[in-house]
Length: 246
Image (cartoon, rainbow, N blue to C red; front, side, top):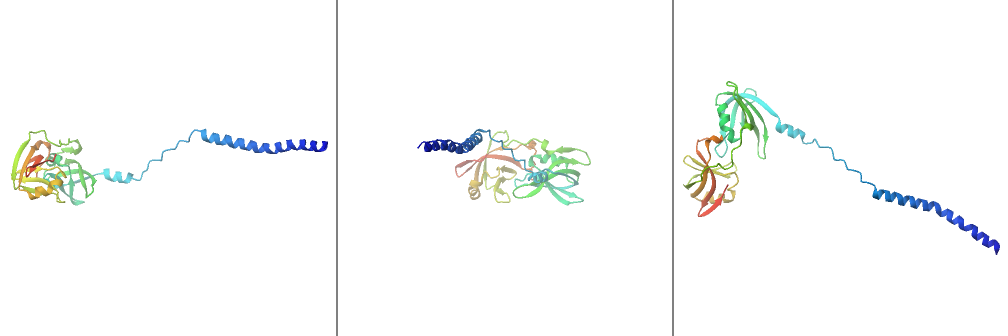
């Protein structure tokens, strides 16, 4: 019996010794897990800027210079002059648009028959791609103008409101059928594009209109192709219904 007890006592240390490496591994794994949980996050670097759209921007802002003779001027649906036709040696006849409020200055420098130097850029829009005039120079006089230097006009002129009663005026539309103005004799009543679309059917079906409008001054740079007196419409009354249109 004594020998058996001795053998039992000698076996216990052997079992503890076998479990010791496993305990060490478990402790190490716990330490690694704790370190992963508490370590500071690695910052995410921003993506490098994409150059995918650069060629498009370059094309849109690239300027060109061309010399030619002014043949004539063209107008937009509001009957305001907004483009010139240029006869060139290399490109033949080309049309270059400009903003209507710069017309007075453009025509003063580039009178019909004069040779000019035009700085322009490609001007793509949703419907059409054309040329946009950036600067103009008269080759004979040397007078030039950068069009961006001309200030834009106010949306509504600071003038006294006038009232008009119109009977059967001419209805002026754009190329899409939208109403842009009413015209009576040498008076043109200008609507901002899109503002009368909701009442277009009333305008087309009516003959009598009561308007409240302000005069657009000639010194703002616009030139009407017919030299009409242009008014900016603020309110229009049709069949005793008044609509604010500005």
